[in-house]
Image (tube, rainbow over all chains, first blue to last red; front, side):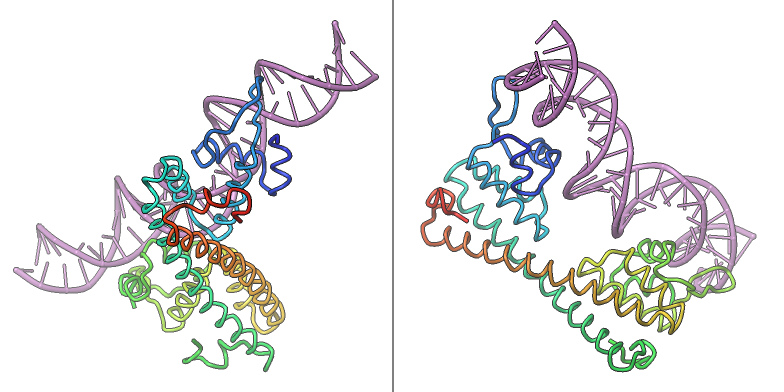
Length: 128
Length: 128
DNA sequence: TCTTGACTTGGAGCTAACTCCAAGTGCTAT
DNA sequence: ATAGCACTTGGAGTTAGCTCCAAGTCAAGA
């Protein structure tokens, strides 16, 4: 599978795919004789995985570490698990921040709806 | 309230507070005779609001727009409400992305737990 | 054979959101 | 009055994560 096809399939620009490879997030991509990338099924699964993790804001650096550990074989299984657990913790934290913000947005929108007047004006002291 | 105090109270660096002011996110901060910022209670409420919105990833540009509309008075109430609704939509989208990623992380961590073997190895084809 | 178009590279440029710095000002305590 | 410290400014630097560009290569079709 050439880069254009993969790009289309996962809605990631060719530049992004090359960038991921450059920084070590997609190592060992096979090339044709003339140097053109040929992505395997396994490459595609990694790409899909990376895209999912990125969509939740996991840093590229962390994903590089995961990929690197993965390449080092079964000796790094515990480390990888630990890494995933850490990322889950910070993901849950972010989700909690968002939940709070969502509640607040809901409250504000409701205020606008009820009175057509901003809640900042109605509740000068206890707005939050 | 001087900048150091506000900085401590909301865990935002003085540089960040000055930056927010510079870009128009905290307009009309009162100054003492010698030019030193003196934050009011209302300023603090805005700061707390901004901090909350930022923690959920709302872009500064959007918050600037909200503050600007707010300053223009009641004529902008509908616009402000619309802005908040749009932000709620994209917040919900982000939360959904995270929920999916969380599930996947949970699945992977479980796999590591069950077998001590990475799910990538066990489920070469249907991993996702 | 010549053109077209997808690919290659290295490196520069961009955006968001800070973060840091140097040089200067002005209370306050000794 | 002088030392120290918190504050001021304008502007430069940083980080993450892309995104763009110029110049070049290669395979395939008219």
